[in-house]
Image 1 (tube, rainbow, N blue to C red):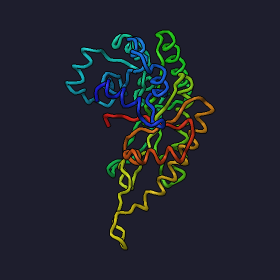
Image 2: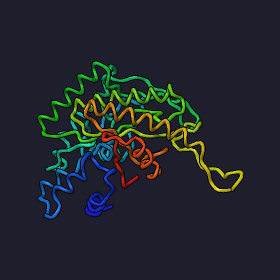
Image 3: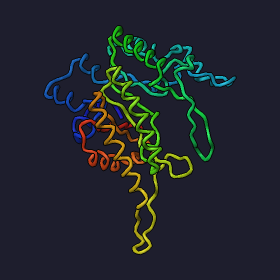
Image 4: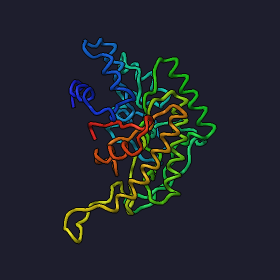
Length: 289
């Protein structure tokens, strides 16, 4: 979608849908006149995801980087999250808002910032070292990032977060662990002055996949019916209501993006938002998903 089309859409979108925290408010403020170049740039943000291949990661044995990644790094350099604020200013002159991706948080050379996390995907167990914002070394790293942002005049507007898992899981122990992790990240976002943070509604239906239960023919009518999805909705709504309450305390809004699982369907996002019905629970639509 072209930038002009995206802006036009956002101006007329339902008030429940926001991007990077307060697009609707910004659109109203500029209604009826041409935006200055500075104002235009204030409404967009640099994003870690497109630049993710530039980020230095934790060592993965002797596996070499693909040639295309080496070419990108040759042109743009290799960076860490601490470099990203200045990289944003140098790469996108005039842009100072940032959308930070959870996967590239932390110092990849500091083991004290990470915890081993096991997960199942496609029926196979895997171990992933995930950055833990609650660790003392991580909190120190966050304070350093906050200071860098002040010095560079940049702001963390949004965190695209993949860390919290099982938010809609029928197993309450798993669900509550996902909520706990999300709250730790909201605390981290508060340190950085973050406005909003995405949490996925991902659903695993038994094989470790990121899909939601499919509708099945009703034995009486033959029409599609999806009773299985109800329990996932109920759990997801519980989680987001709790996170919205917590977000109000720490000043970070929780958001839902059209990713996998329940939120792959925009109508499901609306259902969750309507049921949670909280000023600190919003949506961050991604028009490229």
